[in-house]
Length: 359
Image (cartoon, rainbow, N blue to C red; front, side):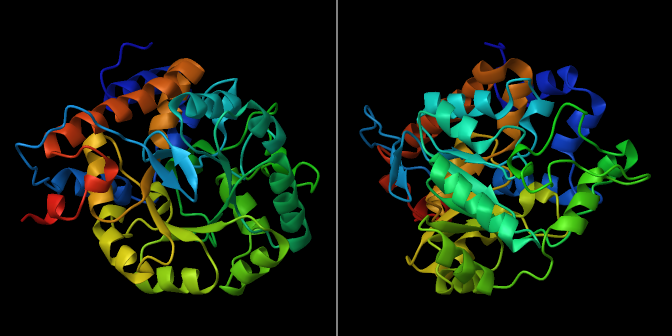
């Protein structure tokens, strides 16, 4: 145990332990980083209209996502390059997610092969997918992650190019020589190119990912896999409706943690609009700015099935490996349990819209 009382203290521990390039990569956002702050500030500004005189002696935090039962409505978001935070990388993180009884979403840009991550998992693993210009390589990756035991694809659609992350540009971001994008080794896409005066990741995305992606890509994915597909990077109701019409099982309301378009809205501010557009035809998840258990209550009250957390997991990983990730998730669970009790909710079904809209 690190002794941290909350995620902010865990963040401070991680910052003290990480090299500048790694810290800046994990922490940074696009341009002036206003969207990173906006995500958190929007959650903080939303009050909860709690109920009183409700018997909350017993509380149940469990729910289901895409048919999988999880111990709490907090999932681990896909984030790249976990071995920059700790030598055990994604294996430590997936084991901690299993300890917490929740879903781990593995990034395409993982430092650990999907087979090793799924083998270490005791809970559901989903795979976050970038669609490459090389569709054959993308299809091979989809077949590989399905064979490894992944239970869903989470397709990121808000990165036709990489947002300009000035800290990474200043640091000439690159992976250490002993780290690679493990799941793309066979395709020859495992290394970030060295680029003078820019981020190696930005150059990688510009060279290899498909900026011409259209909604027909979802139909193409459905034709090559039986896995349910979530579309991640949605901030508009009309785009959410298009995703469902294209055959997605749901959407993730996300602005990439403020790392793509700095002028993007806070995810919690657009969540209700997306939920209304989906209208029960799929599941709606949300990420971006969740830092307290009460934030989870707010998201569920606005119609999310669950939230995903990214940076807090990396903070825990940097601070104490698997134990640190478990500690981060335990903090959120403890705070969620208390917030539910104080709001008069005995289970997640009792977290309804009146808690944020009043009655």
